[in-house]
Image 1: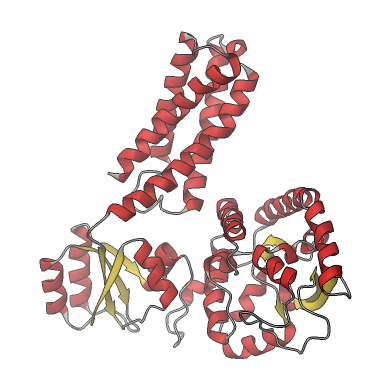
Image 2: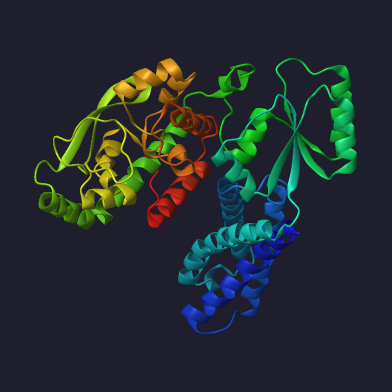
Length: 429
């Protein structure tokens, strides 16, 4: 049902947008020749999205995947449109203003509608999707439970040795998928049963696959057994780094120009509410565990007692400082660090060297977050609330490793979109 509405959106949005662009900018209806081109574009966009896997069962759930499918498909369609219009002699009949506006707004409308339809579809589901957790029991934390609940997913644990119970449960209930969480090789009998379930259309996932697909974080078990999938966490390739650096430079430069009035006002408010230095400078750990100086707007009174964590209603924070923290305005000076190359726009959060030393000792794989430069914002920051203990740092590490392992321009765009949502919602992260 959801894919039906996705197809409706993909077919009608390009055509309807083209119609309204002609009405608004040229004050007349679509010429018949352009109408036929519009119909061809809609059909081609539908076909291209199908080829890109945009209508598969689980492949189009995330914003990053929607961005990838829609933008790839739309760019291909636009190139095909220009070529066809040239071949049939209709290139000059296309208004440049209409074409540019239309080319820009269609993917935005399509993505927004698909996100909206997806949420409506989830909210209207009365019967949740049942997933069986077969093997070792895992206690999902509060935030993991919330993430699964938003997707209408419930998990039921069954021991991997209880083959009879497993068969009976699947027979009597509607099971969407099975997550295998075992520490030793599965028995031949369990393999046969799982193979039969797979042929019957029940999805089979490993624990890490389930975490990455539905919780969008890497799985790091406390016993560290079977974590070979973390071997795939590597540095960005040369082309990936070049693309990421281009995004860093272009977006940071634009943001610096746009936010200059905000930064000037912040300087005035800091001086007024808490006389002293404007900036807060501190040594933070960057790529390859090398330290660099990070600069932020000062949000605490000077000479406040030392504590690496802030608490709710912290007396050290002055009123405008509290606003800066919630709105992320205090982070704006770090845009200079991005332009200098010390930081990325998106990446793992910068941490104090004293905290990193402790985390390195207590949290396995923590050093791998230093494979890339830290960021002003990041996947962990937009997916997990502000934390003040080692377990919170461990949870955020899972998101950081997912980000590094699965980096793409589409995931980068999703981080930026979610960051804007966080800032507008003034949720501290």
